[in-house]
Image 1 (tube, helix red, strand yellow):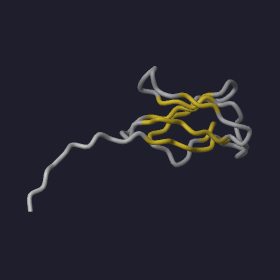
Image 2 (cartoon, one colour):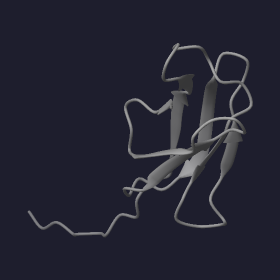
Image 3 (cartoon, one colour):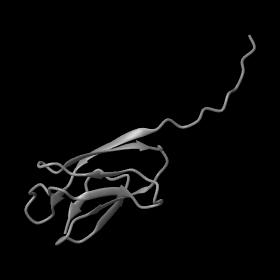
Length: 85
């Protein structure tokens, strides 16, 4: 049985998460969430519960950055948790 090998391009994905204050765990509303590697990257803002969805995002590793006036700008590589300090 003969087979063929085709290079498959990576599929874009969605990064979902929640931004909270490090000291209290309270949701951070209207925080700007983006990828740090390019100006053309998508940007999202958190909702009232601190939740965001960032898409489309290539599946390769990148730094995710969260920023909000009055808080320390925070970044993480493919984070499971990203809290403002």
